[in-house]
Length: 78
Image (tube, rainbow, N blue to C red):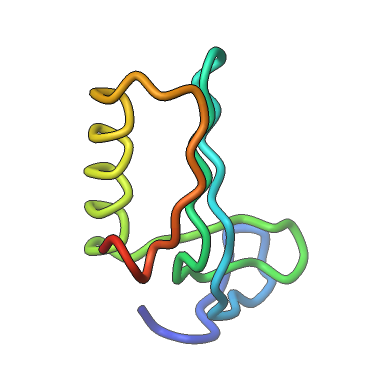
């Protein structure tokens, strides 16, 4: 991921670690310390391909367990 890429709104993207929340309606998965590029104006989040694949795997694993809520640390799982 390149630092300071342009967002679709025209503002700059900054490299940060964020908490990513996935709400399934009846359950919630929170993944902390996820590396992302975040727009300083609109808050748009961009993940590189590896991070996106890891988040997808974490989501699939969470759904298989049928848990109601989970808070996990990306750095410990990915």
